[in-house]
Amino acid sequence: MAHKITLIPGDGIGPEVAHAAKRCIEATGVKIEWEEVLAGQSAKEKFGDLLPEGVLTSIKKNKVALKGPIVTPIGEGFRSVNVAIRQSLDLYACVRPAKSYPGVKSYYRDIDLVVVRENSEDLYAGIEFEEGAPQTKNLIAEIEKYSKKKIRPDSGISIKPISKYASERIVRFAFEYAIKNKRKKITVVHKANIMKFTDGIFLKTSREVAQAYSGKVIFEEAIVDNMAMQLVQKPHNYDVLVLPNLYGDIISDLCAGLVGGLGVAPGANIGDNIAVFEAVHGSAPKYKGLNKVNPTAMILSGVLMLRHIGEDMAAVKLENAVKEVILEGKFVTYDLKPTPNDPTAVGTQEMADAIIKKIK
Ligand code: NAD
Image 1 (cartoon, rainbow, N blue to C red):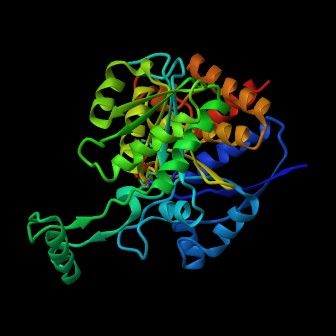
Image 2 (cartoon, helix red, strand yellow; image 1 turned 180 degrees about the vertical axis):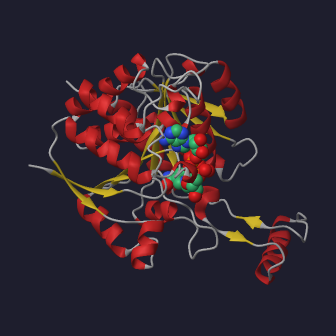
Image 3 (tube, rainbow, N blue to C red; image 1 turned 60 degrees about the horizontal axis):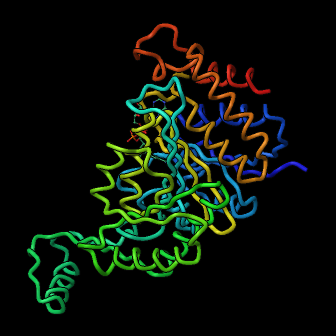
């Protein structure tokens, strides 16, 4: 039976990389019935709405989506379509593998890390108070009353909620992920020495959850600033990292940098029953419609999606085909060539064609 999957082409380079990924996924032989829905600028132009209700309905029904990047408009109703999708569907785990593929330019070799980022709270909860607004002044007065500390009156305030509930489910998710994917070690990353009541909860809950997995997966702790240095100096010492939202965002970009950057960084946003797969990169508007950018990040997001739907053989075939094309270095986009102006660089679809030819 065919898998039913929602496809959101997205904005900018989204439709190009989504099309390339769709073709590569289909070439593995897995039967998929795609339900294509518009979100972002294209939806705004057609329906007057950045996130039409049909998008969430389709993802809820199919439980799996492959999504292109979506522009975050400045000054429109909500902050970001991407954040709205993650929050509405409670996709609380953001999983971003960072893996070296020989042939991709990088200072490091043989990196194989997975960042598991809490996706629902922390400073990304969107609870902010603008400098000078009356409620901000009231809030500052209340905080000063309870904390007996001074806040400058011209401050903006962002709230950082971290709950036991969300910490427990993300750390449990990371352990289950580690077991399922035969990973050996989990490092919980925090700043609990300074933020005792928020990161403190994250750390304490991690230690409690880890007890249930003792003997199965190694558990260790790292303070986030030290983690950043360790990852640059000794990235091979790490395996799966689990982090609160903000640190997860920053460290996952650092990890993408370790393996050659945005063109090759896939990702997934996962909840209890629903998963949305997307590249880490954005809509790169200056490359829109040029058939120029690297489709690899989106294709590797498709590999993660194939694994998620239980099509492991197809996932292996597709990943191996990507590896071969990158290693040969012939039919690859400009960013994978020795110099960006290399005249032998091929376009997005031509790189996808080369990958399709290698699928065995
Ligand atoms: P971006 O990732 O779109 O692009 C930054 C640069 O990275 C590009 O100019 C390009 O040089 C390079 N790049 C990105 N993808 C590439 C690829 N596939 N191949 C080769 N090079 C690639 O980041 P940005 O310019 O900060 O964001 C543009 C828009 O995308 C913004 O509106 C932002 O909000 C949105 N965005 C969306 C998502 C998402 O949908 N998940 C994620 C990040 C950014």
